[in-house]
Image 1 (cartoon, helix red, strand yellow):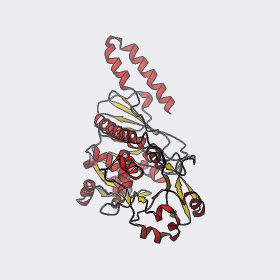
Image 2 (image 1 turned 135 degrees about the horizontal axis):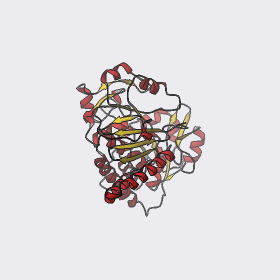
Image 3 (image 1 turned 45 degrees about the horizontal axis):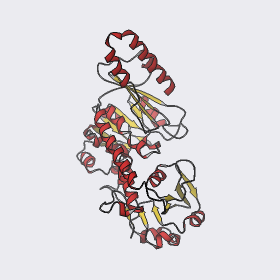
Image 4 (image 1 turned 45 degrees about the vertical axis):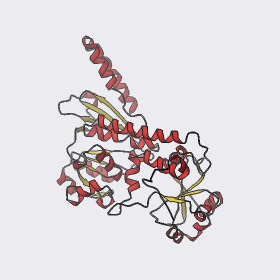
Length: 380
């Protein structure tokens, strides 16, 4: 699909150039505009033209069998015939439903949270600003991700529903489309690059006519992230790190190319499973984890635990790790919103610079002496 879109852009630009040689400067500007504005995200492409943008979402879920292309069309724009087969979305949006808490910070950063009219399972939302909108009834609870309330969505008639799929069988997405609702499938959750996840703010910039604002905000995040990386550039990755916790009878460790592993690499820490190829996680037995990580300097524990006592009660064998004995256990998921939503899940994808600084504070505390954790908490 990307090849076809790129071929169209080339041919379309060529004929424009031939037909409009009289205004060479204007053509140069158009040529500059018609480029993919995405630098880090692997699953998103945004090519802006005069009056419309071509947005392509690739790899929307694991082993996806198709990509998705959308045309974001301004009011008076003329879209070429070759793009007419793709769903057209009128922009800027006046109302939207999103289905992941990771989208909430993007809306707030662009100051368009008041355009949000619906969200599934609103208790998951932690942001005080959006919670205030929920509490006064401006944002409706529209069911659950896997079972959205289609009748309520039809009543709300949002300009767009931004949602996601988990595999090639998504009956809910099909039902939404059959109901005449405009649906956009996004894939920010598939990104493994910390900056790649954050760059999806540019999608919301395009949807709400705030492209320049989105770029400005993202550029600041990139600068902040890279400045944090420079702090540890000369440091040796000496600290060994255990990650995860038991879930039922399995310990899930993050693979070496995962989002989590990328943070630890950039924070100059020696993550013990950094050589485990792939993204996502790998299920291991407790015995295998203990053999490899018994003497690890640090443990980044998963789950909303508050202290070491609670962690030890979850599994008495946890006390066998040196990191537990030495009280070097940290957790990123213990801070919750007013209705129980996990702040880390909501905010961290859009602010990877703050996540990285938390990791640096853990592994190299001397480099950020006055810094206070945004997400992390040391378990005492």
